[in-house]
Length: 115
Image (cartoon, rainbow, N blue to C red; front, side, top):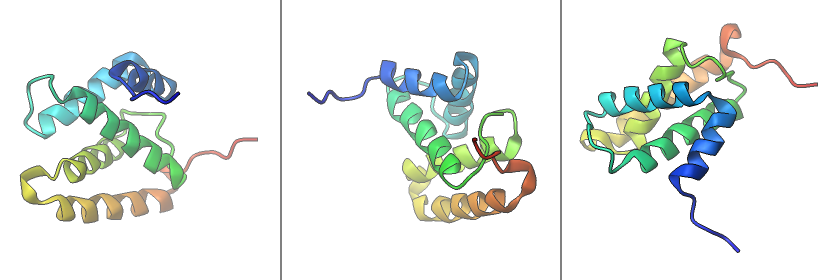
């Protein structure tokens, strides 16, 4: 039986990728970037953050170090795109895609292959 994911599910997924402190820090940075202060959309924003990290991983980018400014910027751009921030979603999509492509070609951000 399928159940709709809750914040608990997203936190469990996120803790696989990041520690809980890092999850909270990234969520706070994204909320500040989107000029949001309430908690009503935290579930949606956390889902967007997780999707951004998974998308970066999909193209071979190492997202394990969330202190990397370009990883944080990519997540913020992805969230602005998904939230259609200020009606400029397409602009943020292009910016995210360009940064993702640049990171996937940069040696410092390429994930080590698993054995």
